[in-house]
Length: 201
Length: 176
Image (cartoon, rainbow over all chains, first blue to last red; front, side, top):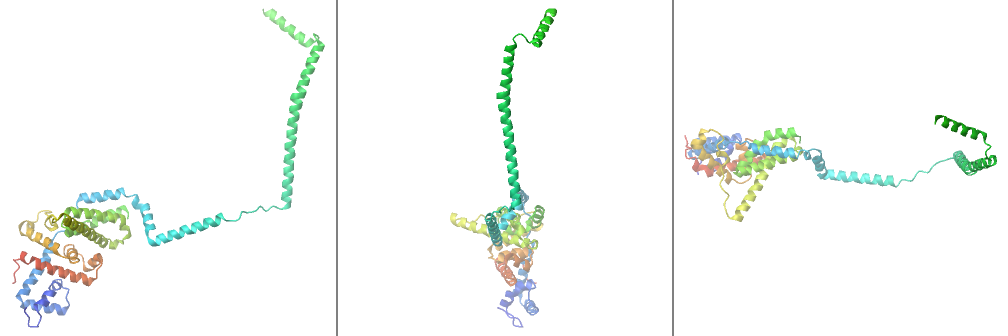
């Protein structure tokens, strides 16, 4: 171990050497190291070596990722594009602790609101007496109308088909029997028909 | 993260990610796998990261993914009782014409990368991020989530260790 005129040892300087190379020392320490290097050949060599290694490290190249890697990344992103949009964001949102709490609170609020709505009392109709009386009158009128229509329909059925028509038919037959051949309109008509047939034949 | 933002981020950060992975792993194929994995994770989760912190986040994820692979590799080597196959170091792969690489620099760089592999964490990551990738102390502190003082001390400790390992590689260093 050597010691400079100011008393700085090689160990101390070598300890500070990298910081000295990077100029990370305070003014006092930097001056002390610089003065030691001026006087100490061994530490000067270490200093040169430190500079050389740092320079070599800084000359090491950076590298671009191969095109095939970037292509694969882009293809994967494209395939997952739809999931990367709304769905993924929603899923991610629900996975956060605060979001999960908010989601649970919202679901609880919706459930309580639904329960309250479901349990609400049914509204009762509020009708006054005049309205009830009017409705009763209208109902009676409607029933009477239906009854009258039914009665008329039944009357038509009974009188028309079962009484009037058979009666008229019976009267016609009786009249035909009673008159016998004395039915001038019918006879004359039949004669005219036969005359026309003979003339054409 | 929108598609256009993602494309721009890939262009901007792929080099940093791939370089860090390659220097940490010393294995090009594994570095490619890690890069792909990290960039896809950026697609899935990058929107949660503020744009100004995206690079630090990417490098942190890259470092963690790389060390996961290193751990797997060591486990496999233990199981099969064999050393990991020596790989071409990232600093000695010929990207193009480089006279220094062809003449004397090639061997020196190979030794340098081998010595880098001897460093412990966090010094190894810090040396790579600072000296090869040119990040500031502040950026490195953010990537590794370490105090600035730790970054500075670890960097100097790592380079001092390299000096000890590489003394024989630099016999030409003389004192004027």
